[in-house]
Length: 103
Length: 201
Image 1 (cartoon, one colour):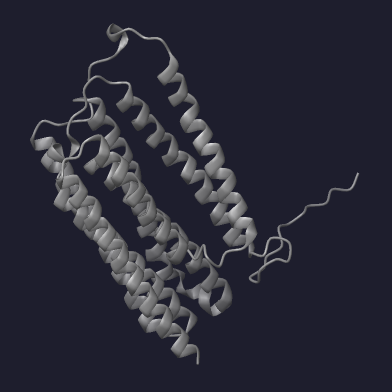
Image 2 (cartoon, one colour; image 1 turned 180 degrees about the vertical axis):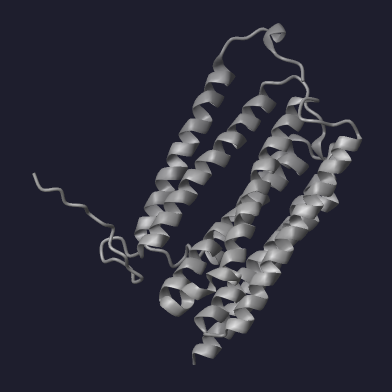
């Protein structure tokens, strides 16, 4: 019985593995299309889905307890706040082109 | 005044209040701090990029095929880790060791390929001081490589000398390997974002 359950889990893991590799192929394909800004808006969500699938299945987030979900939720909230606070500041700060640094 | 020392209870079964055993809660707290660490670097990357007039076409500078192969290498090592853990739970030590060695081998392959990439950059005169993009690229991938090296050390310990822990307490050892696996999957997860961000965008 346990052996069957392990076999099922193995089949699922292999399926997930190829699914993530397929998504990897998708983002490389999108990159080859040279879509510039649109490419960014396509690649980032696909990469998030890819990482999400990995976390959900390989890190067993689907079966984790509320404690872990709460911990991750708090982390994401703090991270996004810290990410968008300076981004908002940069976006709305009046700057002249000469203030930009050319890299 | 009496001094009492409080110890964190040593348990291998999930606690009633958290629903997790202590080591697992510990690793998730650690991974949360890692999210912040890499998150701050991703944040810096975004701010530097939106604040600059020009930015190189990353896929033209980077070796995308090697990056893609490295993604597959790390993903494969993740699968091997899961197989190793399942084998350990099933008391199949030989199989567990075999898969753990594969995990370590693939981690080394990842580092070698990363080294090839670095060598290509250096031979083209591309160093961290060359541009902001290269500075953040070397910083983020270098930090990630350090995590891979840390993972290799931990995994090597559990595949080799650390096996004696299994004789002391089987469940304890299984839990430790699971915790190491969570770290390994996290390192893989970070690479997915690094590859997308630093190679393709």
